[in-house]
Image (cartoon, rainbow, N blue to C red; front, side, top):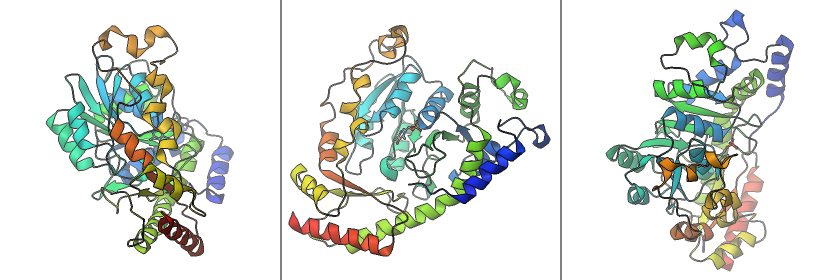
Length: 395
Ligand SMILES: *Cc1c(COP(=O)(O)O)cnc(C)c1O
């Protein structure tokens, strides 16, 4: 999906020729290098006060957010049935227990089901903007406010997207982005945490750098330093991501133009219905999503000539029933650290079954996704539209 080229090569070459690879290494610029510049620019783009680039990825960004919120053993966190397993694993990584909620016909978490799943130990909810499609952040935040839940947005697939003109990642207490090689902008691996909450951010910063005491910024910390992990990013990542961020608006506008053209030209097409959207303007446009009234129709549409589609039910570890290590409670390197076995978690809701979210399974097996490419020519887009039209007629 991401675009990459000479600008990134030049930026990397400059880092290497200066010989400064460590983000805090250069005293000549007050130990503030390219990673710091990227963090400022990314925070500004999302519309929040703080951003933290890390080498661990979207998963680590989610973990940092949960650490920042002080979530741990004894806490439940609601996650949707349709997301990459990493969302649930991040909850387990801090010792808390993920509780599953259904998605609705937008493919995002169902706000009504969040409300139904809230229990006495629920501390947070993680809406996930799958395929760059915005979740209903208005309803989610109002439910969270009513029940005093924290909100962490998993925006790993949705860099630059928005809901009602506010960027995804900026609605929640924190947002998590991934810059791995399957995402909208990328430096191969890595991710970013964003937040307006200074205390959350400070805890995340401490957690992400096991050597935080050595940093010049350590003297500005207001919270006690605890021992964290090592997820610091390199100046090469910072250099690439600064260029990638420059490309983001162009990628999104091309994707959105292609998606809008497909949807408007097929608005009356026989047999074709698009998935309901919470905000089409804010959708990243990485994919077009169709909805059918049976799995049989979805399967024949998916396989029709030129369509190149896929059913989300077939996307392996993105569907909760395929999260085998979670479903089987095989978590952590040592059994004594397995959150499912911790005494503080006994009594929390962890009876998972493969059919516990039947509505999600139904929606995911009646939908067809077609990935879009921002570099398609008009001819390529028109050919795809013709293939969709023909496939719809056949149903
Ligand atoms: C990619 C992704 C992640 C994990 O990101 P990594 O950078 O691979 O850790 C988490 N959640 C969702 C929805 C993702 O798509």
